[in-house]
Length: 397
Image (cartoon, rainbow, N blue to C red):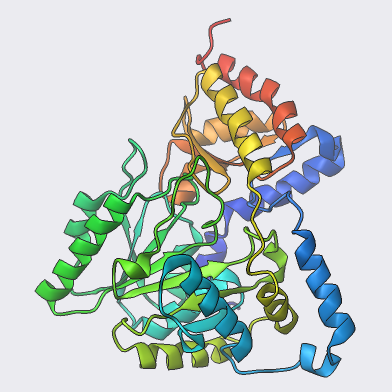
């Protein structure tokens, strides 16, 4: 019999993954071109040519034993050094290889850092809407999730409610910037206010509160929006990054943590993250992909296909009467439903449209649409969205 903890995880298993599996079944039944699966953030844009070339160059020119062998649990020193130098160049920071821990994607990185810092009963604050897997990650280490209600006006951080929820049990705060599912990018003013609150609460309570910045969508922004770099605003920041979205490599599971020297107990944190990588069973991040991304740090991320999708979907849905804050980053649209979200989700399936209910992100009354699909998928889905708008009174025929 499985463990009691796993029973609860299985019962609350990802709705997103369930929708994805349902999409595959519908595609087999009706044809892939007649199913509009917006459930999973699986990039439709191919990896840059530089990635494939780097793989070929490495495999053709390097010793296969070295390519596929073990290394330090934190990753290849030369790769970590290259990443640190790239971050310094972009954000005027002062990191070196000791500040970088290579991880098995952003999810692996979050699990590594949460295992490194959490004691049973410690609280981790998240802001709705938030990526639902955070609850499972925190629960892995017997921590408790505390959810800040969403600011439905623009999905910026609800700092007034946040401040009320900080206690002596608060060990960490997770923010996802740009945000999944809303596509919101947190403004510099928001980050300044967040940092001020955290510094005041640390002093008031005599505790250390880590700010974990989950940033897999950092490069996917539109209209000249800037994503500020949090370690420059708050000393106790730890950054988790992944190349899953920026380089379209979700299945390769490659990313890193940044643990600044300014963070409390930084040397212990680095050592703990190194050991956690091993005892969680990752051992190390994928060896070949570490070498690949080191050669691709200067690759320009082309958001043109995503922006084209964003414009078509947003403008069409607004025209049909739907309410939505236009996303500034990532590749998700968080749309208010004209009826209960589950009623809407089920009705959408009749048109072979698969979207994820907002309650999966602690924000009921909305659905998430992942527009990292082909342009034709969006274009061909629009008649279905239009019929739904008519059905639920958003459009008058």
